[in-house]
Length: 197
Image (cartoon, rainbow, N blue to C red; front, side):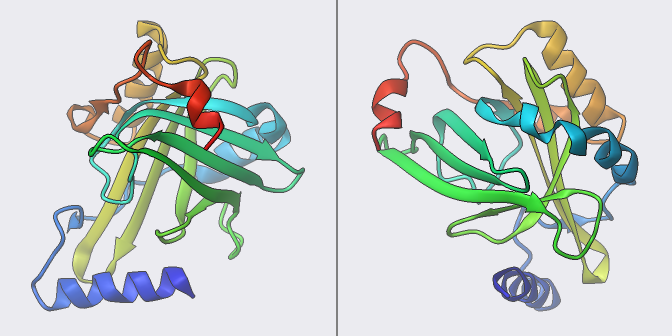
């Protein structure tokens, strides 16, 4: 219901010619989610654990600005996620959510965080040990869509070859990788205190 209300608000905004800047003309790209789903579902347990955000596209639903650390706990069906980091105004913040199989039977996961709306969560590529390339796209009426991309890493840094794997995965679906912005990570991040939030 929360997703439906949010989507109706966006559609109403588009119809009223008050289009948010993250809603753009065009349609979501074609992604072979069935193939990805069949390959990844048996390995969901390997996806569990800590993922650091290495880069993302501009995202109004991302309240954490830097030092983003995501901890995924898998119960055999879905993931509980706790994201911690520092906001743009320099506050420590913890945000919780879930990642679960799409409730309508579509062949991808769904991400659902507090203070946001449920959205597709497609793992375009991952080796489970070093990197993950995440894509989310929603089509709206009137020929508009909204999409977001993330690069995750198992550590605060990521090798150039793994970054390229994600960039190639995004380019394969015609996503403009110049939209990706590095997330500040490293020695100045208070990872231990984040875990205590």
